[in-house]
Image (tube, rainbow, N blue to C red; front, side):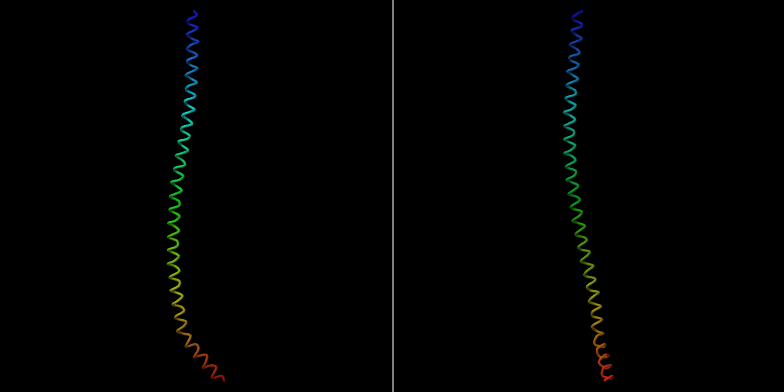
Length: 104
């Protein structure tokens, strides 16, 4: 009878050891998985930051190019308006001078 009780006690001890070992291994695996997930997240974050920076630089470059084109077009339009005004200024001066002379 004693040997059956001893066997049961021994089996219970082994079960406790197996349970403790399983809990310990589970904790280690969980910690390792958490570390790997954090590293993967950091890598993804770094990659996405790089992509975002590249997209931002490209957008800025395109914006500057478009702004330059618009400024150039506006400058050409302003020059054309000024040229037209300069062509008419001589006629306006002559008209004003003749009016002043006629009044004097």
